[in-house]
Length: 188
Image (cartoon, rainbow, N blue to C red; front, side, top):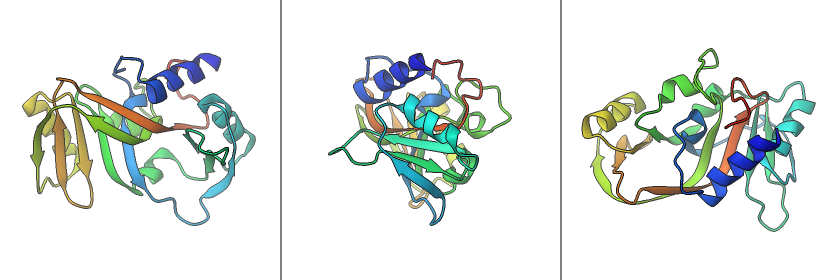
């Protein structure tokens, strides 16, 4: 569990100069949590600790950890799973080589399924901004066709942004995960 905290902290908050090609690096942003779905919020020092709080509650299925700002509560424990949460998010994205669909499928054996990041800012070359893309699957296909490093799809505007590998980087301040590691093997 300590390795999980170190790796997630390194990748999500410090950048570490590596881009892990696992489900832990899919992005879900602009998510609205429905009323009654937050069990409680606590102050937590690490993603691992936030996950441990989730394990205390029978109704907790997903935890959301944000970097601490002014010692506020930064760990939300949710009574909803990753698929339910996805339906509340306006922006989603992934590395081209990672199957977003496998990452949100609880029956998948993909590495780190159920984990995601949020609150991300992106830098680097934008290869294309495609308007009127019908869904995230088509945006992911567009990334394949353009050989993009990363894709982001906006559900509300139907825009698909494709990022190139040149100087691509992203910094995220939120990590989400399941109550249990579900195949993460401590390396998410």
